[in-house]
Image 1 (cartoon, rainbow, N blue to C red):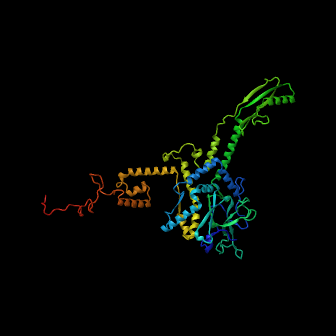
Image 2: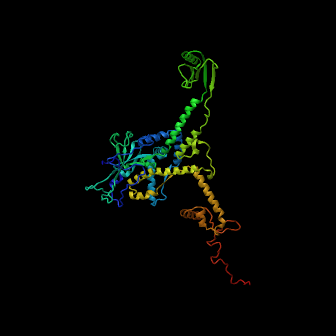
Image 3: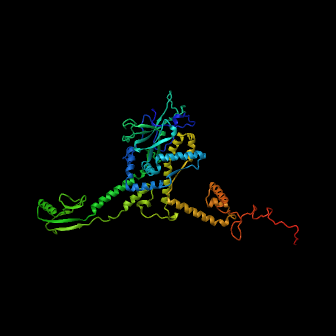
Length: 551
């Protein structure tokens, strides 16, 4: 295989044979299956018999995002996940759980700040997150100076999801005797294939209009193969296991949006056809023959037909016979012996103001996108009431946004990993251990969660105040802090240290100091002696040897 474009961190290291061997490849979370060299790269997608490739699927997602109702739901999700503030950054790195020195933590924070500057995340955070949510995937090319790789990432370039594909190529090695070998070259006792997986990206500037079953360079206009480490890749986490395709969170709303569109179009047609009143003209033709009766009916219709036409382009009303109305009246002949010429009126459509079906499908669309129905259309104001009045849908929505943030943070992890490894801050082995303890703190703006936390804290303090007379009798102070106030061991130790420091600085009074009965203020020890022992002895007043003894 030819050398891939870009850089690979593992190229300079000697690959060691794995100690644990399994015939089952590692599970993938992006939907890209392992393919043999003689097969196809990529996968076909068949969703309801309409979409054949991932290219069509992504284009469908982007068309859905342009629909007003769908766009409103997407904006609600993006605005909750990414909060822009004038002073604070939308996201910050949290290294409190990382077991490392302060110097290393400071360097990691600086490198993460550099990554945010390369992304221009403070200004483009809304656009970046929206592209990831709509497409279900996000690609960035990590541009570095190959002559000076220690300088780190020089530029992060966004790649359109229509132009990039992720490929896993599996190659099974065989020995001279025809037996299947494992990845480390040893004979496989189970005689089952263990493929050697090669992962890379294929970039095609012509937007991969060919089916994804075509190989790179054959029928698809060619393409450039990128090394895996040169591309930062983040998916939505939704995978169709049956078809091996990464999906977007908009996928569940495809059917709901199509139904809503059809209902709206049919409603417009129904309104236009049933709204106006139409007339029925019964024309008396006497004993005229059929041909003459029809000619007489046409003459009367042309004579009395409305010839006034409204031009919507210019706003003028003109008298023109060449324009035919879409909603014509009915002209019916009537023979001699009838009731003569008669004009009746057909009423317009009834129940034209009912929109229950439209509202139903709008709510269904919002439910499919995991957005609370109460946010639909902006009806009703924001009520800062008690947490008990908060809908359960809002709490579910908050958890959903939290999961999206966790998934999106993988992109930061990948970029930060590359930056730290290139600058020799950590080794790849150390990063695998540190990665699990690195968190990302997004700027929060959910008032419902704040109300919930505030009310929970108020209830806990009320319970602790109620139990105050029973502390030392039925409950210990430690029990009250752990069970009633829900403080952890780390919080108890931290708060005790802060309380002792503030007492020492004189910010708060010492609760254990004796109280002066006259002033009600804590008594200060005088001359270094305790208030209950003025002479430093046992607390008793010494007897004067010359004083008379009183019996």
